[in-house]
Image 1: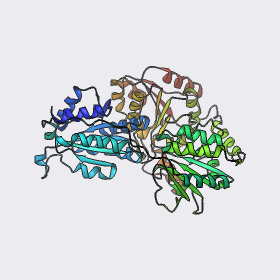
Image 2: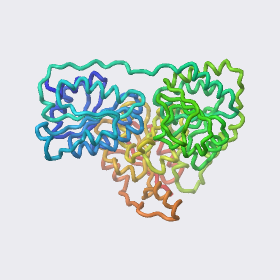
Image 3: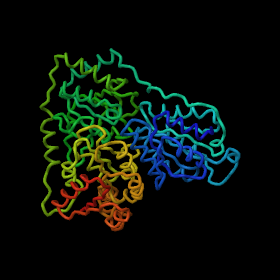
Image 4: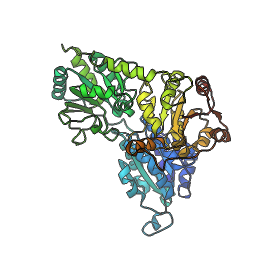
Length: 528
């Protein structure tokens, strides 16, 4: 067979079902090898959308999503989504084409040093300059991408190498390497700190969800009664129905979670990533007692200098701590944070004025009511993301997907495609008008592959989050105003249903109709 056939067989061996990408001349052999395989190639409208699809696939499944671009601009267009996956700790394998080896030593058409460019946004990347290294390289790309902490890897495939003959066979995929259990001495030290504290608090991060440690975290919380504040990407690690949930770390309009952190005399972080949330935002002193439980040691940071680090598989570490605390005679005080939780819930549930304008915050309770527990909400980046993170009640892991590492605009519409393909639940892609028009053309991709999710579009003709920050700093905003098309006409031009509610009754009815439909739809919320 030729090398492109071998590469595709290696992808099949890794369990790949979809490759998202844009076709190019230099990837011709690879495309036809995909055509003759069990893998579905999904042509998209922009490489950034392809990378976002692979990114969200990795977030939801734990298996590396795969995206494809050609050389030059195809590869550079992939970079934002690849970097987003890397900082969000989402497993992703990017494949790019390249010109023939005979012209890479000199300046030539569309030729860039893509491997060097991808160096800082991936865990590992290489050029496939010989058919005989394909099997090892593909296996390594998936192993490295999926190993905790996961991220992005990249393979560059020159067009002449793709057509070379080879008799190499794929390497078998193996079980992922797992961390060992925590050492007994460190566990004992954590137990001692927990027993000595009067007001312990847990910060649950992305790692708690990503490593499937939520069940063990919930058991630990139920055993001890210790409250939990989640990061944006940790939403769902503990159900917001739990009496121990203080919702999200950055509490925004309601400061109760921040108050609880200030009141706590012991902070236990579980799967916390500094790239997602700067610890200087919640750790205002250097004397806070912090226990770091994660798959890697903590980053060295003055604002985050843990007293003790428990490096292990999170679920195993939490299970062993639960066993220790279950037989401990320590009685944890659960009264100190109850009023704080009640204030948060009361604030979120406040009914809007009957004739008041729509706001993201007041729309979210209506959205929550029409969504089932297991339905998936994917948030784009913008002012609406802050409200979703702080005010959208989340009950299960991986049901509220937020990018908060690189935090790139434009992820939700293409991300909705990946989510719809990966889950049987209803999917809502929430976005602002700024992020929507960055990748809104992927609606065509969604309809072509038969997706049926709902786009929830908040429109205010503005880059709203930047305007808010400018006004807070300067009392005015500049450079943030936008004009928009008629979004109902835009939706109809793609053959999907468009809804634009004018009042609260219509909002609930139209959201219910959109989510209950077996068709793709767009619901525009014009913000006051």
